[in-house]
Image: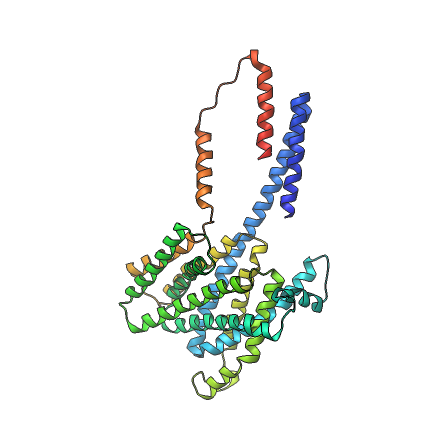
Length: 408
């Protein structure tokens, strides 16, 4: 917002200067307009460059956190095969969202509120009455269950198939979000996104075929597709029921999800322990480094995804997710956990291509038309300058050109 305001003010000054230039014809005014336009361009370019640099850093962080959590979870299961306990443990770390957000609020906001004041203000997101018992069980608890289901199915899939296939198949959630938004939210129909959804489905079928439709791989692929579907359902229902949330509201919501998981779901790991489904001999024998590593990386990933748009473009954040696929592929290739045949390579490429196509903006076709129009105008030959007899006309044309250039 600040950069936009700063951009509008110099533009008004430049147009005014160009007007005066056309009326008076002073050379000093022309040079002043040129300096102001140059300062404006430098300022706008600096903002864009800074945002792009943050974007590159964000892509690397998102890719590293997502790929790192996937690989660490795979290593954790070799020592402690407990996908639900790991899901419960990692979801509990969501309780840190609002405290971390409040620390950022104290550092950045000029109006510093107490934690209680900030909490009450963010609670308005749930309605005029705030966070009531009815609101919790109707608007928060279902999303907490979807959150746990998404992560649990993803971790279960990691036990069946390799990390590369899991991370690639999970990218299909973007296509499922579009299909559900089109059906439920009545979002705009886009042919390119339908093509992307078809590519995602084709990639799923090809990836299943790559292993010869063995029961082990089919179960793993089914689990990760179900995880992607639960993730898409979470996003679409959140927009339908709660709408769009600000940073503080999103942090509070995720903190409540983590707290509810700690209070209401702790009995499940206890039952799994006593039934020897997810059993460990002693607490000291648990791979705490891996468990905390997975939980910490998932927390970092969710922080970057939810709050990264404050410093960079959302498309770059999504790009970090799809780049985790080749990173996981390199790790799997190094650890000999995967065999790359032609069908698998094509399937992964098709899924990633569909994911990238879904990142196109809604007005991408209009942008292409405008770009081609500008390119055609540049290719047109420039008319020769008029003779000295029409110097007054030339002066007026130059003034009009400078005005039109700065006003766009």
